[in-house]
Amino acid sequence: MLHGIGGQDHPASAGDAGHWWQEQIVTTPPDPAARPPGPPDDLYAALVASAEDAILTTTPDAVITTWNPAATRIYGYAAEAMVGRTLMSFTAPEDHDELAETLALLVQRVRLEPFDLRRVDHNGRVIDVSVTASPVLAADGSLRALSWVERDVTGRRHVERMISHLAFHDPLTGLANRTLLRDRLQNSLDRTRRGGGLVAVVYLDLDDFKLVNDRLGHPAGDRLLQLVSTRLQSLLRPADTLARIGGDEFVVVSDRVPSMEAALTIAARLEHALAPSFDFDEARVEITASIGVAVADAGTDADRLLAHADRAMYQAKADGGAGVAHFIAPTA
Image (tube, helix red, strand yellow):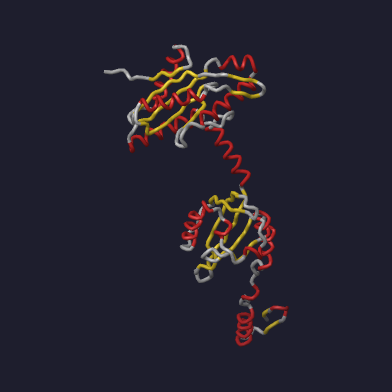
């Protein structure tokens, strides 16, 4: 006797045994309908609805088709107001070209690294977002949609910009510091190599600035430096660089200057700008500067040009201050 499923006995005859095994073959194949189901659509919908990041879908030509609650929280637009609009409608104008390039890559089914973009919320405020954009493909491989996951990084980017600003700017006056000055000077020399002309460096050292700190205190000295910075900056071209590189030392870089005479004219304007007194906090301060000028063409090293202007400034100070001296390269 053979023992079958359910404890039923089957005779050990050839016919019966064949019938029993045939019965097993018919009844044991797996039922496709019994496979574990995938996550239901309502689970995906719940995940999108509860996400902290803005999650959007668009057509391949960037028309918005879905808009989750986080997108409303971040941007301030309701879903019914945004579905049917394009991504361009709330993208900062200066980022339109970048978004267009991104769309062109996505429709080619290119998977991109996360990138930064600037959106504009319903109050007109620019929001920095980190974007992960992906093509969504149908089962047959055709492009079905585009997905956009966007995280508000405005606060983080603000801190990063502050750190970057402090790395290259004087915290008291907001002017370029020595590091940025060196970079700008090299850029000016490079432009001169391509376009001709000279680069002028005007080096200013305020005379007897220590007396201001001693008599009025360091807060007054700081305020004077800020006022001097503003006054000097007002005389310069947008392309010029004004830097504060020491306690009372300022440097101007101006490129495409035709001659030493033109550079000396710039120095004279700066000198005259300091002539009127500075009135603040019930104090009146008169200040002068020792000014050194040097010019060079593209073949001059940036550090050497700064050193030449510095040397001329010390010559002006040795001559009694409140004046301008210029560096003359020694002849061979």
